[in-house]
Image (cartoon, rainbow, N blue to C red):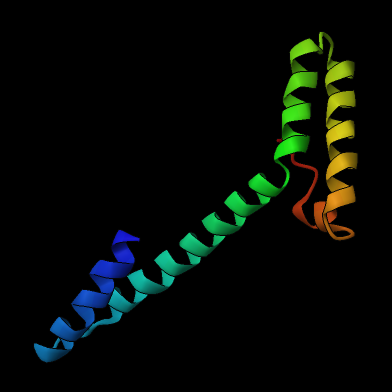
Length: 96
């Protein structure tokens, strides 16, 4: 957020001084993309909060690698019920 504000304030100052504003514009673009991705990740985590809590509880009692795999399978299945089809396939098989 700071880079967006700093970039927005720098653009008119740089243009007024006759200097290129490319770096300031770049910081606005990159920061906006990062802020959007961060907001999406936060929203997704809040949306899947119950499923993730159940996953964490399952992992606490999982004593073997096999039972940890079962916990992830339960999480994946529960998340797939709430998310649009194939979202988890697009994201890959990354475990939380």
